[in-house]
Length: 334
Ligand code: CUA
Image (tube, rainbow, N blue to C red):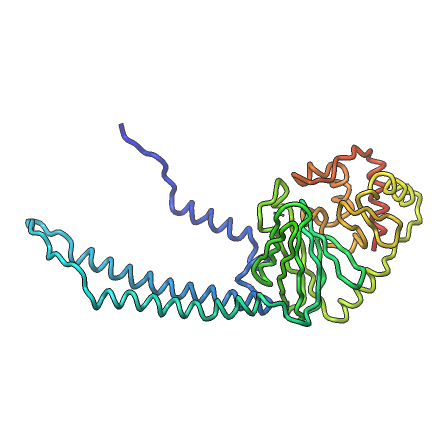
């Protein structure tokens, strides 16, 4: 019987790889497109080690192929090849060459390990708390709290002070720098800086439960003036409830939602779920799961665990009318 086993064609693999890679977006979450000093230095080390490894691979492969061909068994030649044992010169060479290469790798690695390990003294602080499955950002001293979107000023070193409310998460914004874990009961620091304004995407990088893949966030990098204006607006959020639907929604929120959610500018101050102050200024809802539109808010309120597996916000079995009034109220949060 002819055994075929598994056969994966190369073109199929290539297409699959292309689809997977393009799915990551060319630059959306790419460590190969750094926008700050930390990410740039880390990418530099990556290229350096890749260059050294490629060089070693090419040399070893060349010597290997040469030996395969040059010293192959020839027809009719049954004699044993010359038996060699030990060569002091070679032994010394292939001990010293790796040491030299490792020194070249060690110098930048140790240098940057210290440079990135020490928090710059004047760095702006942002407290980050990881939750299943969302991010809390507090700006100490300015009474600003937000969720799943963090605003920072451009060209400013930011000290992210990381901890967790439940399990281990990992804070990762590939275009700004490498990741650091958020561990319950301890505090980690990660400083990052962006030299470019714009929105960069972050993702939890430590498997933390059913909603891990949906634990995303945005980093909005703004000019100093725009950032100051954002802090101002967060400190004085506008909530103007006027229509009957908005009022009904606010009433409903006070019964069903306020035990878990805080909204700046109102008396709602629950601490279990994400802070919803100025919700409408955020690009996404449910920690990056859906874009922030009224239709998606309604979809989310209808069945949170259905939209985002593992979501700890329960299905409140709201009627369509209730959902519409809640959305009307949430739309006032600016
Ligand atoms: Cu949090 Cu994965």
